[in-house]
Image (cartoon, rainbow, N blue to C red; front, side, top):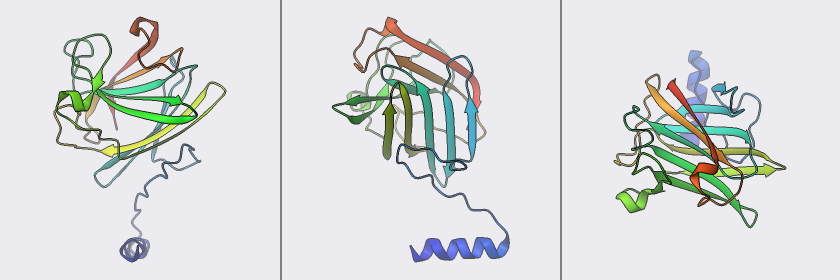
Length: 185
């Protein structure tokens, strides 16, 4: 705590802005994130900040069911190789999954089934009516083959999805999906 305060004082004295980590609490405040992007077709709004070696990501969307986001270093065979994150409510509590797309289509599997681990550092959400606000954090580079390395400024493919039910095992054909090509954090 003392070290952080000293860095803040030094930064102020030098006139240097220091990025502050957003509070992962399921609520996105004005100015909490460094950058924002609205995807008009899906209605998803993405918020993000890179602080040190960590990506803080918020998303807002309208959905009767789960919401998800994924990353692909490059599009080679549909979704195969995607690093995916799925969020749903169960008994009023958030369930946050770190998943990996082993096949070109169909449901992804938990990272643990493919030699990885859950790389979500923190996650929180609010779900009121059909309105989601999700926040989570992860390292830019996890070192796992099941995760895509995020390099600020480097273009990747971002996948957005939601379903009509909270059931993450719902038939995949009943979900809505979008690809954001050439997206850079």
